[in-house]
Image (cartoon, rainbow, N blue to C red):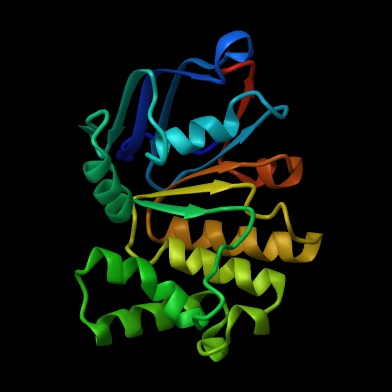
Length: 230
């Protein structure tokens, strides 16, 4: 457990509720969840399938809307039901890493990393090229900038996805089973790349995982069951 005294809260949720399904199949998936994520801290959520882990992650990432409760990014409350605002907040503040890399196959590794920067629109082309190159060098892929995803191994593709998630220097990094599709060696390499870079840049990281070995490597492990943290 890491000390978080004095560290800024990058992401917070209060009393989050969410149902899924309809009619007789309607399920109360999240039942008033509270959570604070501090900069520079790596947190893991573990628990059985269907307990609400991924549902919470998508709500925190503004990819879905809670029914009750509030979400705060860098101490500012996120307004509900404002898709345009949510899109901008995601682009500016949140990086995502999923189980599958979701790289665009026709783009090189460097071009994939540049995509979020293009969307945010704050950097010149030369600045985007320099930043993407630096990020790929940080994860040991500086010699593979111009490789297509099909020319990279599974572990390399996932490391490119990590670089892409860090492209806009987000304060928050959310990862849903980021190593779930990899063997043990590549899992450790991807996890180490993700956590090292996030620590260096002072980001709050939340990882959903079924891998107990990776969870133990995090600063904090939160167990979820039946829509609540224990």
